[in-house]
Amino acid sequence: MQKNKCFIFLLLLITGIAKAQTTVKQAPAGFDTFRSGISHGVIDTISYDSKTVRVTRRATVYLPPGFTKNKKYPVLYLLHGIGGDEFEWLNNGHPEIILDNLYADGKLEPMIVVLPNGRAMKEDRATGNIMAPDKVQAFADFEKDLLNDLVPFIQEKYPVYKDREHRALAGLSMGGGQSLNFGLGNPDIFAWVGGFSSAPNTRKPEELLPNPELAKRKLKLLWISCGDHDNLISFSQRTHDYFVKNNVPHIFYIEPGVHDFRVWKNDLYMFSQLLFKPVDVAKFNNDVTGGSK
Image (cartoon, rainbow, N blue to C red; front, side):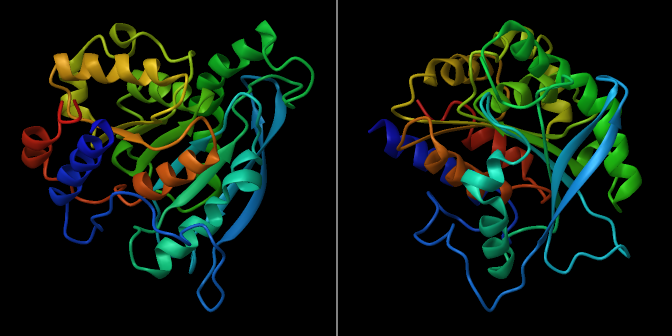
């Protein structure tokens, strides 16, 4: 019953958005399977000077099919989990395949996707004790690296829009917590925010969003999702409950699964189709907030 309500909840949101968006409850079979005979995006590996960490850092970038420097693109910053790095999504989630297929089906707005290393420290590999205090702190420190170093670099290197309405932030697990922390903490930077199976690093709701009215004015989309058998679901649930209490429009999407890439690939498939498209705010408010319980 809980899962059925959540699927209806997501359906209500999507039907309130531009007709160009596809009404789906879950990714269809084959959504993450490589398809020949379609156009494919390109993966770049970049290096940028981080004044925050005082070292040159790396990130990977997905450029959409048909990418050209003659037009501007919105940007999605997509973050990994505590045991990953800038290659975790590519190695385990293959967003390039998921997005290529969505583009081939006409379901996405063209966007650049940046996959950074969210561990802002000089030795940023996921080696040794990944739970060591300095490594956990590095995930919090990434906020400065992201805002002050990486975003400006992307704006210099690629033809991207520089306004908040064309910038999204999302991630899985530790990266989900980062996305909620940084995205909601910087509404003048990010208008689209998604937390997939967000981890215990997620701030308490009252700290995440001390001014709910600001979020209502600034955010285009706030997405929270989690697998129904994920041991970390309480962090997503408490955030959702706070948003319901304060009438903050959002999607709370509970899906079948645990804490793994089967869930996160589905999240990316669902979330990406909502980005950078017109949103019917009135419909969003009336039909979505609190609709999952």
